[in-house]
Image 1: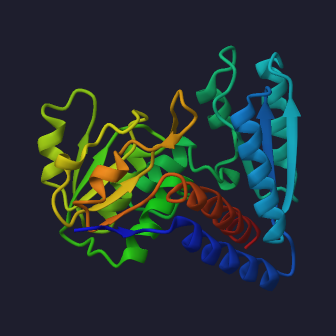
Image 2 (image 1 turned 30 degrees about the vertical axis):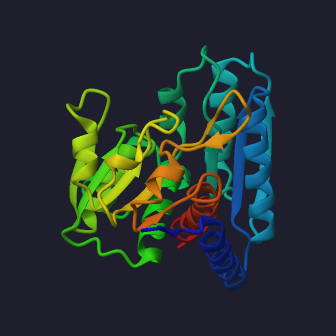
Length: 280
């Protein structure tokens, strides 16, 4: 068996075109402001990609750059100013932040209606309770990829490998809302390989390169690899051993080109949703 390759780039292109059409029909340009603290190269590249994608969709994108040693109070002041700006519909603070800044305090300072990352406790709580919320972008992208494959979610045995507040936990809530049967596995789970073999849908988000091996995969399972890790030789790999797992899976995402493009596309979608809800 050779797996169907789930082309995240193609699905993201479709979603971005849909977002652009929605923006064109609004009669105004939603405003998105990204705050980047420090000069981490990976974060800087990611922010540029977000800015370019937003502008292509007709979103008014701005980036505020602060030095790595900027006081936390300065960052909070920028957030307060953006919260009060009626032309700003979405606020995103690029993570990770320098160690001297309290990430939780920063996330909680963002107006929940403008929290396009979906990290504010009010949005997290609404998601957990099955209420309308701005949903974290990567989990939202994963769900769109699953639906694109046509895999049946109702009643399916789904394993989320990883319990981070950014991916694992919100993804479990989204799968539960889709009527899947959920298991969340993590570093303290006994016999992770056995848990993986029981899954019809496996989503790996551990941050450990090529952790999931081919013999962990149930034949025909759908495998979504959220991880992106750079090896010493410069190669980018996921949390799944791609060559091994695609021999057993029914469908699988590549790295790169799988989940990654969906994250930015879902950020654009969240920005439009935030604009519509806030200005309604």
